[in-house]
Image 1 (cartoon, rainbow, N blue to C red):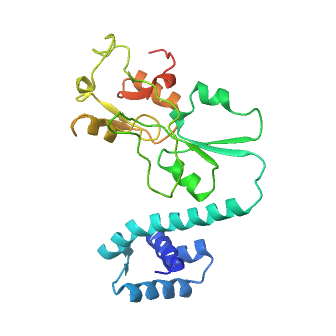
Image 2 (image 1 turned 135 degrees about the vertical axis):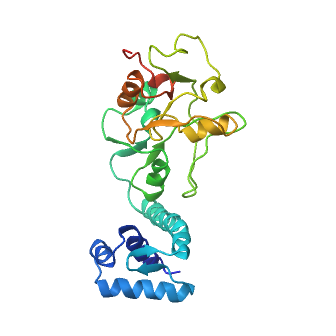
Image 3 (image 1 turned 45 degrees about the vertical axis):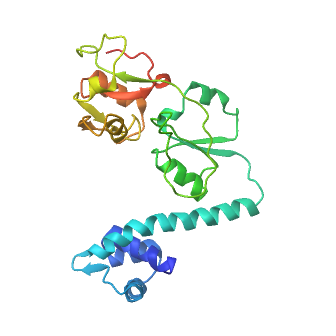
Length: 250
């Protein structure tokens, strides 16, 4: 499949409009229509309904393949350009919010560094696509189940640190004054769904045999202070690396 046609298809499917995709890609609307027709002819399947513009079942399946394929192409281009070009001054570090602990921050050079805080799954993608030189991502791991990263490109990875996790509970919570808790003790509590800041609930559910950890409130952000404040206000629990759990009122 021609990647140019795939890019056009993804744009039309995501924007739900041939004209909007044409503006975003810098093509005429006629060229966009020709791209989609050529791709449908190549695959022998209708990919989009026209009124309204929406993916067909075959088109939905193609979307699942197209975006990782296009990312891998971008990663390959960035990798070759990076090897062929002269090294630029400075370093761009992409990191998940809770990976930026005190040891990491203290180790950064005094100048020439750009730090970008991203969602966990976006960190490997940024390194693969060349928008970051280095990525730092954290997550829940165990000796029998090491930290897994999205398969976006053949990246070189290193484990750099381990630390315990802590559960954050509001001061008045019935379990707040225990010295330790088992994961199973917390399965039926109200939880904050904060996949880009707290440890993802899907990981906690998997570690508990696939049960419990239902979300009460969702936080789509990367500010750890906001997440901790939501816990203190009683909106739900969260799990964080120890270094991210500085003392907070409430």
